[in-house]
Each structure stands twice: as structure tokens, then as C-alpha cells.
Image (cartoon, rainbow, N blue to C red):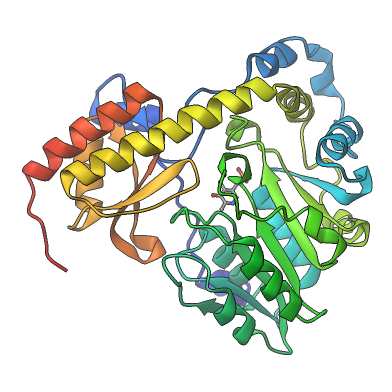
Length: 369
Ligand SMILES: *Cc1c(COP(=O)(O)O)cnc(C)c1O
């Protein structure tokens, strides 16, 4: 429709993973397994469940704390920063959008990589900015290519570390060298939605790097390892000057009171995070071994998901898996038409997925590429 702003005219909405309810309704089956949206298969911490139960119902008639005082203080303590450095968001996706709306106009350019998170192109297009998409290197962000792409009109660079949907990560040395080369008119957003899962020794501590690189915004979320995807809460960590700008643009009550209380409780449960990480680690090994047995190449991942080359159009494999009650994610929209992204589930869920995948592969043709 011609009334739409120029950037919105060609915009295709984000496609979420199919829900268990939707699949069960469509296929008339029960007991479906969802490994499609990188949610925590263990769910939230029991401390979160208690915290939500103890919220008085009268709170729903009051506006939440628009400054998120208690949660920001708790996060600041945990991360070793000041509360003025934290910006809360309705999911970390909101921070990604806020960053673009705060620093970029339709006369500017945003850089992000091929095979990177779909929200980067969405927010870039929505504000009518120019997208400079750099080719991937080894499935991940090519920092040299990104540095070379920077021009006078560049205002923002999105780097997911680790990257979704490929699970690749950027190392400390490469990141420091890159940041040294970024001019002062460019904001670098380090999207660390999967930060808590990573145990690669060369994975950078980006928050510690804020003292050297004032133009960095680190975003994290309670949706992934903390198991609060349904509540929509994430945060940004930056220098106070950057946070103050983001705060001008965000909606006054962007995070609801239940999410604030739940997130605060989630931070206290170190054991739950630990357990979630170890279940994930074992699951990654389990899935990788199974792919090896099936002769399927996969992209080594440090996240809570792994993308596997099913050697034929993955959309068809996805559809057949659905009929058998397993929801995965085809990623042709990320430029990977033969890859399926699967979230690491519980041991039982992973086994079910592998069993069903093996069945599907024997009944469909491999296509050599
Ligand atoms: C899941 C994910 C997010 C987090 O989204 P929320 O809005 O916090 O739920 C952000 N970035 C990437 C790369 C992700 O995969």
C-alpha cells in the first residue's frame, strides 16, 4: 500500500518458529517437540516460578517501575558496572531496534553480515537506512570485510556473538583489532543473546571492553538461558552516555512488572544457569555425533542450537519432521537453503529428533550440491 513509509514497503515480517499448539492443532497430534526458537528446554528457574506466584494481583492495575530500578541494580552488581549503564528492553530485540532508531536515519547506513540475525535487516529497512551486508567468512562475521565496508554514512554495525543461525563466534583478538579500526561516528552493537552458553576460552568479555571502546552497546537477554522468552525482557550494557540516549527513545513502560520480578529472580539462580549450560553442552555433543553418524555436515556451534546440512532442500525435511511432531527451523531465509537449525533440547527431545530425522532422510533423496 502506497501509504507505507518507503522502508516499510518492501518489508517482510519476521517469521517466528511454529508453536507446539499450532502444530498439534494443524496435524491433530499430541506430544510435539519444539526445537525451533532456541528456548531453554528446562524452562525457567524454580525461583522465577515462585517470584511470579508471589506477585500480588493488584500490581497489574499499576504501571510497572519504568526505570526498572531493582533489576538494573541487580544486573549492575552482577556485571560489575553501574546501573546507569543498563538499559532494559522488551526483549533484547527492542534494544536492537532502539539502537537503530537512536543513532540512524534514512540517510545513513547499517552494516551486518550475511547469515546473521533476521532482526538486523528488519530494523534497517524499517527506518529506511541503507543495508551493507558483508559476505560471511566461515559462516560467521568477517570483521575485516565489515571494517572495509565502513564509510562516512555508516552509523551502526550489528555483530551477533555467537551468531544465530550459524553458532559461530568472534574471538577477542580479532574483535579488539576490529574495534580499534572503527571510527568514532559508528556504534557497534554486540548482540550476545547466547553469551551464557559460550565456554570458548578466546570468547571476548565485551563488557570489560567498554572502557576502551565507548561506542559499543552490548545486548543480552533473559529469553535464552534464563528461560523467559515469553515474558519479553532483555538489556543493553553501554557507557552511561549511550544508555541515556537510548532512554530518551524507549517507551516509558517498555518492560512489564512480572518480567522485571521474574528476571530479578532468574539472576539469583546460578545453579539453574549452570545446569542449563551443562545440559546444552551434552546435547551439542549428542547432536554432533548423531550428524556424524548420519553423514551430515554441520556448523560447529557454541550456542544452544546447531545448523546441519541435510544435503537436500531443508524446507522439505522440515515439513516431514513436522508431520512426525518435531518442530525445527529451516533457514533458507538466511541464505542457507540446505540447512536446518535445531535447538538443543533435553536428552529425550534430542533423541526423538535424531530418530525422526534418520527416518525422514531414508525416505527422501539426497541432492548433491
Ligand atoms: C534470540 C535472539 C535474540 C533475543 O531476542 P529477545 O528479543 O531477547 O527474545 C537476540 N539476538 C539474537 C541473535 C537471537 O538469536
